[in-house]
Length: 548
Image (tube, rainbow, N blue to C red; front, side, top):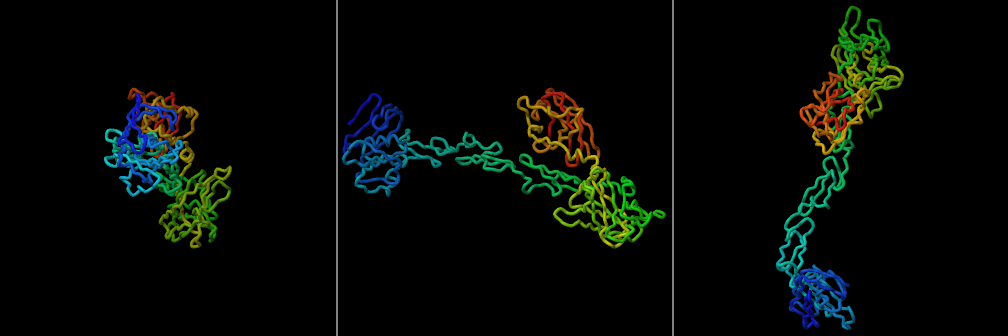
């Protein structure tokens, strides 16, 4: 029976013996009132249910995607049409035919592809369609084929990450809104998907990345260096008393002045536990002290025991890294072993010992009269003043009985920190990435208005991490370093020997090569890095730049 509407055409059947060969639903608007309530639907799909695919007492199993109760086979066919994945159906007739009591099973496959799944069942009818997906599909990359659509007779539903009529094109997953990797991660497009990978210096799954504290694991800092974690990296700084880039640190070896040719240490700073006589005095315990008239070539103790010592008062806090000893000039007497004591802020002296050890370190000394033997400590020791007293003492105590009364001369081979201790060890850091001269400024930026006034500052600053390691000494154009007027050092950096020097800072104007402002700052070379005494720039939108 054919039923016609103005905007709807469909072939229906009154009984199973009159099943149509073609069931065609075009792009037309119609109302379904029986089981779907009232709604308006527009779609385009052509389905062919040939009578030779109508099989009594047969049922396709393992492929059912939906089960409904319907009034007729026509309604079951309509449901199959409306379900884009349906290509066949199983229909179980209700003998009493009371209401919507017939069983309708919608399948996403046909018996042609899964012949073994077509079973005998006396209560069911099997109804198959001409499935274009089985015959003609060229869908790729695990796409889902749906029969009855487009002029080809099928369409491809692409799986995630693919696009195109046949899903043949890999879509760049890194461009989709759902592929948001963390700001500190990179996105790598893969076949049909993408992978988020945390950048070096970060850890996580790519969607969430946290900074790795390199200082907690294996890092590149020297054993005599401090490790400071920074964003994506870390900074190595040699311990006080050592010099280098932090990855390689060597002990400083600037003589304090016990050498008899230099005498930076005064006689009044030298004392001893005892003296043999005035010709063997403690003040003769200098390196390279030569026999002269009645003066012997070294200091000799009055008593022959292991409690004898010679001591130097350094007067200021000092980091000690080495001690050099020498035998008695022009006489076969020397000390073979010794220990070191120092005061670290208290009234008493402490023996130097290797960290982790429970007994004092014993240093090997001399084997002849004139050879100078340098002994470097495994770690430096910071000699501090007694509380309320300007004294910092280092004591060398002989620990071998052989010629104990004839300890000759010794040099305290140290790094004198009296000029550099405060500034090179007490500074603030500038580490933000926008301060780096490689960063272009977007908008107005910010300014260094939190620095102290010129006539009030005693604060030093060091560039580290993303900001760079020092100030640039070549022109930085305006609109860099996160600000409009970019500040750079107009002159070379000093050497360690130069000490604290004055330098001009130019804040670049937009009209090169002019300077918007010029101010004077102080700069100091601390060996492994530079520090700067910075002041508030004269105008806002001005900033000190860093560079690598």
